[in-house]
Amino acid sequence: MQLKRKFVLVSVLFIVAAFCSACAHAPSNKLIRAASEGDLERVNKLITQGVEVNEKDSDGTTPLVAASYIGHTGIVKALLDKGADVNAEEKTGTTALMAAAYGGHTEALKILFSHVGGTALLAAAGKGHAEIVKSLLEQGANVNTRDESLTTPLIVAAEKGQTEVVEILLDYGADVTAKDKKGTTALMAAAAKGYTQIVKLLVTHGAEVSAKDKLGTSALMAAAWYGDLDTVKYLIDKGADTYATDIHGWTPLSAAQHFRFTDVARLIKEGRRQKIEREKALAEKTASEKDQGL
Image 1 (cartoon, rainbow, N blue to C red):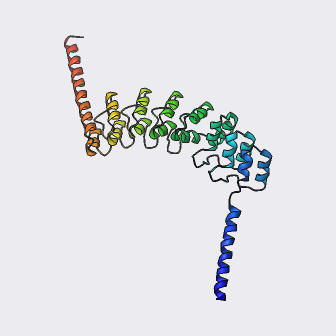
Image 2 (cartoon, helix red, strand yellow):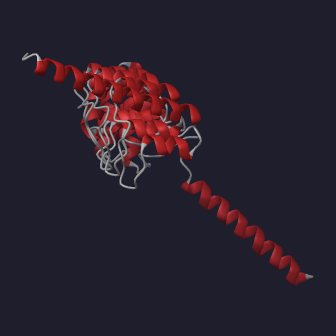
Image 3 (cartoon, rainbow, N blue to C red):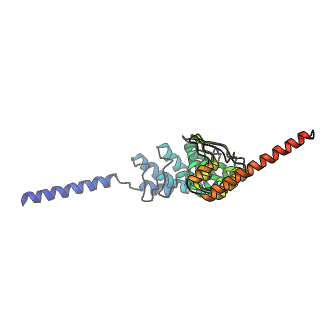
C-alpha cells in the first residue's frame, strides 16, 4: 500500500513539473500587448529581457503583426532588427505587411516591404487581397516578381480564380506571356480551372492562345481536360489550335473524348470543320486571284 502511495505521489509530481515547464515556455503575450498599444519603451524593455519576438497569441498574431496593424514604425523596426519573422501569418492568413496595408500605413509598408520583397505580392495575389495587391504595387513592388518555381503574381491569381486581382495586375503591366518552371502561363492556369472570365481578360491583353507548357499542354487542351465548354468555345473562336498534340500524344479532342465530355468533343470537331472550310475558301480565293493576275 505504501509503495502504491509513493508511486501515485511521484506521478503527480511528474505531471505538475511537466505542467510548470509548459507554462514556463508558453507565450506570455506581453510583447504582443505592448506592440499593439504602441508602447515602444516597453517593447524594447521586453526584448532586452529576452521575450520571444515571434511569440503568438491564440489568433496567431505576432508582435510584428500587432505593430503593423497600428502602423507604429518604431516598433516595427525594433522587432525586425531583433529577427521578427516578417512572413509569419495569423490564423486568417494575415501577415505584417497585409496588416499595414489594411490600415493604409504607408511608412510601415515601406519598412516591411524592404524585408519581404516579392513574396508578399505573390501571397496577396493568390489569396485575392485586391487592395493589398494594389497597395504593394503603388509602393513599387515588381508586378512580375517570381518565386523559386518562377511563378508570377499573375499566374497565381489566374490559377486561384482571383479575377479582380488579375485585372489590377494587368493594369500595372503584368507579363501575360510569363511562364513558370513547368512552362505554365496564366492563361493555361485559368483555362485548366474553367475561369472563363479570366481567360478572356488574358487573351484581350495579348496572351498566346496556342502556347504550350513543357509537356506540350495548351490552354485549349487544359480546358478540354477540365470539360469547360465556355472556355473551350472562346479559345477556339480566338484561333486556338484544335490539333495541338502534347508529348504523350493527347489532343484537345482525345482529352474530351477520354473523359466523355461529349459537348466539348462536339465543339472541337465543329471547330476543326470550320477551320478546314476557312482554309479551303482562302485557297480558292488565292487561286482565283492568281488566275486573274491580281
